Length: 541
Image (cartoon, rainbow, N blue to C red; front, side, top):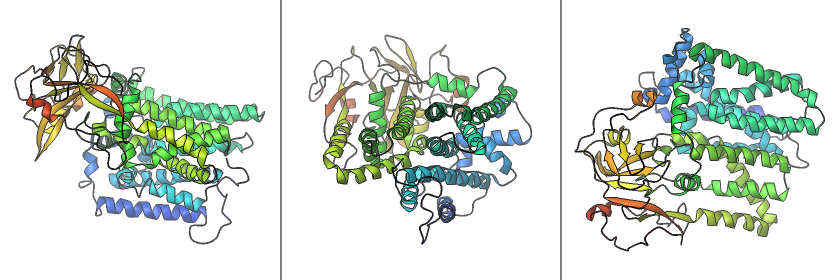
């Protein structure tokens, strides 16, 4: 991507000293992975002591691997797309935790190889690229754990980085084997995570455009053949297991769906500040502040022409599409971003943003005015606040506050509850989400109900144990407890809130106070004047 910079696998192989060659870097990264994995597990575990084997996702992977190993193709034995389980299947004879660790380590090395190739094209040395990569993967504690714990996104991250590097280098002059491999990788991305199929389509479009630009359209046939062959083999396995019916995984994902109508508010919750809309949590930008510099670097790189613009736009497009789809996913909630490990959806993007953050700092030294013109608008956007403003009973509300329920956090969090309002019924997790405030010592406080698809319309009643005739996806009812919540139902909200847009010190920076508590609303009945009465409806200020 950089003019005058040798790209590719051996771009700086002539350097000398420690970690000077790709092989030395691979060995160092592999040893670091083993060390971090050992520290994370604290001791040499067995399958009886690995804590994540009992987690829902990991249990589904293991069940599918065992079923495939014995030739069991019954739909009940499988859940996720088969890409990750097929990668682990050849090692199924090993202890489970070793099989996963081996595959995850190989995926990390594959992701690093792709990242290194792109860094070299950006005129970043491989040693500095290695530092960026390990700093935003293994060595970043809240992220590194998700390269060790089994997730489908580990294989997906490897495939995405490989596809990115090979797509950027594609000109049609590569050997047939390289083009066959590219087509296979592109087809394996959606076979690993259906949601990442959009990324594969963007890369495929770029490769086709590169072939047309270089007048080598005929050289695309190995890419197409490999892609179709891989897709056909996967389709054959899928049909052998599920037939022509959609899987329960697809049904549940469709039931959650995407909500682009509230994308700005959802992005603020996940990236900037989830509280007080959600009782606990931290925005991704507060945990990974280099993301803002990375976003500035993407804009600056695409606009300045310092790197080949088409290549920069490809990486920016992939990051933007993936981020938009992920943030719009209804089931991705601030309460689960860290507590339930959902941050792993973003882990492949973090090294990319770190790379562009470095490029931004490098470019800013020579063009500070232009760099400031790019960074300042992003800082202003991050200074936007969505503050909960009390609203009257008949006005639309985004958040309802209910009295505490004498039950454990997870019992309330996962309950199959329903809220009815003037417009209809809303189900926990699908149309709204209920999260109890933590009160210490395993106790819970008031319960916050946050609208996910539409605002609450007024006249709400909380049915903690659901309502007769409510339809729930089969997979959801099987994975969530039906133990009744204690209490007398229905309950009316004690307070209602809607977003008020404002500007303040960016919540992700230190010294910002962006999360006032909502508990004091319980001290007064609904409808009584708040301590500082808001206007009749929230307005921008």
